[in-house]
Image 1 (cartoon, rainbow, N blue to C red):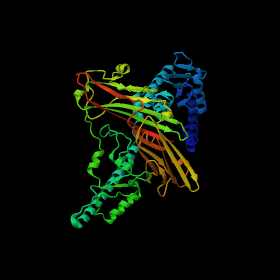
Image 2 (cartoon, helix red, strand yellow):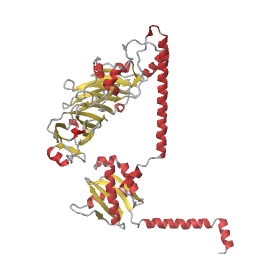
Image 3 (cartoon, rainbow, N blue to C red):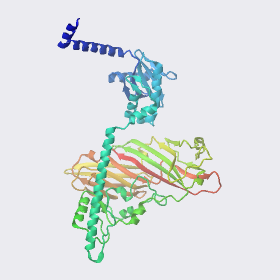
Image 4 (cartoon, helix red, strand yellow):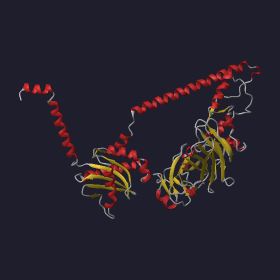
Length: 561
């Protein structure tokens, strides 16, 4: 073909379609040949019974095909064999047992078995990094993180040349858009706080100007800026357990004593009416009163005439004993509203605080109750053989002291699994029923004989209401939060005198599902494991050491769903 003919074909648009046709033929040939490459078809985590927990496909395969391959694997694995792979007519299974699970690679038979074993070894290191609990629940909880990690380790069926640290770094890389969103959100919060502070200063300024014009020199009884409390936790019924207080550290505060003096069956004063009897109130302008009334209408709680001594009484006292041990158990419980428990997990910690370094050369004698499903884990620096044989906590190197300072040092963790509904410290039943234009809701609680529960708060979600619910009967106190549309039921103490109690309230017609999930918070001065320190043994002297221990059980998550 001469130059003139080529130019005429190109100008007429015939050359480009021919070139595109050749390129499509080449791509189709490459895709057809791709099935003969040495590739990983899928990476999966399954149970030994064949249940698929996580599976990531790296080739174009249907879901039915993948499920069929994974379902056939348990039947192919023999017992007592040391092989790490099984071959069928079409695919090869390369696997590694992980506790009660299998980490499995499905490859074609042309793949390099050595490269597949390297890939399997990399994935077996990644799985414990993302799922600390190598069981069905732990794997399912971290399923998406595991899929992302598998994607970083395997690309188009081939192993990437990466390490575990690089995979974690790639998966944790921060997003520029997310950073901008967080910065914008923080700017809005700062602006709102600035505006709120300016409004408070303006109110104080007008109040002071008004006071100067009053005869007799009386001053306003409001000391300092207004304090707005809209949560019950600020009244020292919080179950967070961060402060220990005086004495044993888990007694009830004076704020709760004042609350318990109110007659039962009525809402708390802070939720229904402004405080009264707080001394002479002068110097308030009409605008200030309107501002406070608007806040109260929105559900804010206004505490006036706050005395400095009251604030100081709420702050935790520093430890006075040279050695302080803290034993804490946290509950994560999900109770089904129709009966039964979907999750019941107890996790405990033992921490140490030593004021003086010279008191750090010690060992601790531990005792606990024999509870089924109880397992312990000690700090890496703790002598595990000494603990397992004699239940004594001591450092591996007895010449090293325990760290001293104001921070707690974790010594030991434990976990209790497998408990049933009979072991629950508190059960709550909710019975909503619609009658005409009203919904009657009856709620009852029943406490276990094993525990005396303190600062119990039962939060029931309600439908959006125009006015607060009508509480007909209650054992304890109640408070309605209109902003979150939640009714909170307070019981200061559940002991032998009130192991059970009930509440009845009425709202407009509503779906019974609206009243769930019910959130519950409480604390207790004893634990399921009954772990306690019975003695502190000095290693460099025979003089007895003074120590104290703080024991409590609190709720992380406790719901009726």
